[in-house]
Amino acid sequence: MNTFSLALRNLLRNRRRSFTTLLAMVVGLVAILLFGGYSSSIKYGTQTGFVQYSGHLQIQRKGYFVDGGDNPTAYAIAGYQHLIDKIRQDPQLAPMLAVVTPTLQLGGIAGVFATGASRSVMATGLVAEDRNRMLQWNDYQLVSYAQPLPLAGAAPDAVVVGTGVARKLKLCSLLDEAGCAAQALPVAAHAAALPSDIAALASLDQPAAKVASANRIEMLAATAHGAPNVASLDVIKANNMGIKALDDVYMAMHLAQAQRLVFGSEAPQVTAIIVQLKHTAQLEAARQRLAALLSAELRAQDLEVLDFGTLNPTYGQTNEFMDSMFGFIALLIGVIVLFTIGNTMSTAVVERTAEIGTLRAMGLRRSGIRKLFLCEAVVLGAAGAVAGVACALVVAQAINHSGWTWTPPGYSYAYLVQVLIGQSPRLLAGSVIGMLAVTVLSAWWPARRAARLAIVDALRHA
Image (tube, rainbow, N blue to C red; front, side, top):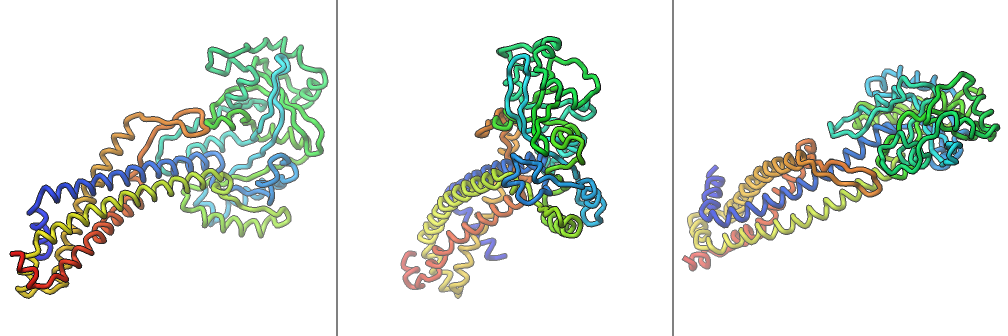
């Protein structure tokens, strides 16, 4: 306690210098925390988006992720409902699960033959109710941009497309654009323009009468045997998918409709089973349990479990980039703070040389001198850490409520700039501990030099 009291009094002896040093520490810590909080928001935001759309884990046939994108039938999973039931009923997995749902990916050509417009699409067959529950996942309580799919409760032939697809197919009634080049033709004209062979294939898909719609399109796909198959579909909405490359090919339809296109009257299959967990921290335990189930239940199909990081390589790349930037900025600020505090402590040693000699002459050991100066550094560091964290939290709140936005590379619309400091305990603890470590390190050499002063030489400065 005596050492702490002396250290505090010595810092208050030269308030201006102590305040300047403290200000440098606060500014440095605020900068580190703000960028770290921004980096955390990017990481949590990208993770939330990927988990909402692709789940935490996916069960696929081996090789599908690498080679099966253009040939889903060669990597389809048979008997998928039995496996889903096993996963949902497993006593170890059940408490972790949020959603378990099948999905079927397929490619094709969507067209409006009345206008001669067509484009290639990547369609996803899904269970709309399950997908909407997946979109509600928000483990980090962020601002979510996910909009529920209107396919829930819609007709069996209903589909949702990206705005890029709608623009290419001239589905102007679905676009909020004044410069849309063409208006949708009347249903009668559309039916008249449909080629007879395409119309015949479309009628085989769903013999029941279809509701007339100006946004009806046809999708041509290949069946499991390579034969062409056509479905007449009703586009009920165009969604901006955020990423332009995805927006230009996106189509979502009911799983049963996608299975009819690919497998016809054969037993339906899927390309993946999506597993979304309640918390990302459960991922490794769930992966190990799923691997054990697969080895016991469906060894013949040679299935594997892939996590969202593997399925979405940009997630890891983004994290590596943000980590490297954070490390560089933290190192730069740490060096500045190191020299600032080192200069302050060195000046204090020079000014108090006679005082050091007097303390040594009174019997204080060299270790006591080192302890005194290091205690001053710790007090200064602790005050800077507390003030820095408080200032960073205030500035972060101001930024989070400012409405400041930015558009990431490759995206179609802007995102709010968010700084997550209070939600990142590891960032807070690491930054505070790092600041204290830099403070002690910067004071160590001046404290050592002060402790090694000869008593007689030090007293000469009196």
